[in-house]
Length: 459
Image 1 (cartoon, rainbow, N blue to C red):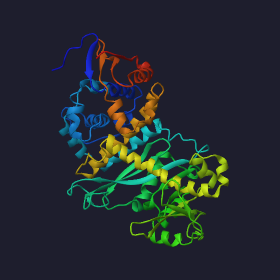
Image 2: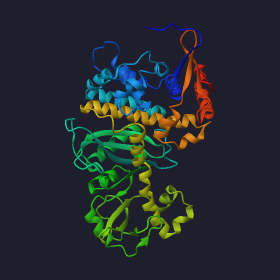
Image 3: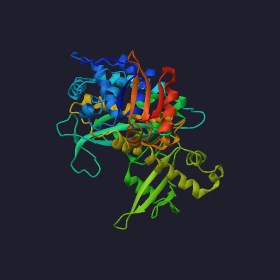
Image 4: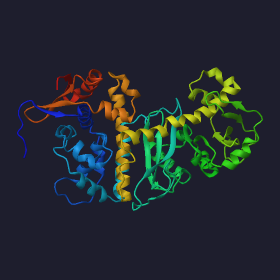
């Protein structure tokens, strides 16, 4: 039964800032590419397939770790639905059915729509290549699932022996924390097989021509450090900074080091320049050996491969320009810059697992899983961009990860006020909530073009 609209009707929501964000996304027509490009062939009973897809996206933003939570996080919150332009919400079972009805063409349609959104709103796409390198971290993360799920197989899942699942490959624009592209692979696929498809996907999203590729750094762990992959990247014109794939070659190259230097940041680790010429690579590279003792007392070796000049590494690690004349400092800077990838793509995976339930939404059909992953990647970027939208009056949120944004920023109670025609005209945040004044000011500025007032008061 539809309730009558009375002047200044007030609707409570436990997620008032997220509702205000939904109003802003409508104001800038954020989701239009998805509505226009994604055409899911499914019979309509009550809701259009695209409406159910958007319900799933809103639910992920609301902090759901499983789409079964649609009923408790979105369907039970009419105010949040209305803020995102939905009059009501589909049941979780019908949303699951729509995802299961998707085929590979729908996956490509959604990927194309998200690419359009990324180009419209991201900093990564507007990166100034003349000023600084574009840094792209490439990595994989395990996504556990049931043994009957498509492309489920035994693979590498940390601390989960004999676990089955799939692998998620991701390219992160590290300076901005944005997911450029991501793909789901079978559980046995490692970065060695996924590296080139992922980089090609990032090329397409970022429109990387030859000149831009020369100013783009690919930073990877040993999975992307095979001779074939490194040479492929070098031939494409990229800068490269990563670890050698072969442990045997790393051990051999480590023997060529004439002088080892203790790493002051990691006790027991030593670094040194490899003196053996790198003739197997198609472009000039520098190599730095790293060694540490295993529990049995023997040395374990790794080798960092880099095309970067010393002055570039010094700049990227935030050290004074004169550091380039310090031989030992430059050597440590190369290794430190490789270590920093842990705070980039690896942290993005951890953030999404904690804050957005990345590994909790497992679908049996492979196409359905890809759709869910793409929606999760879009939610990641929306949260990254929302930090910038909210930061002018509440700068603390710039330091927040996914979990704190979803839990501590979006989950603040409040009311939405509608006028006699049913249009939302005011968002009132709970005055007792943390950060409320700064958030209200930022949201109020964002929503002024829509003539929506955001304030704080008793709820």
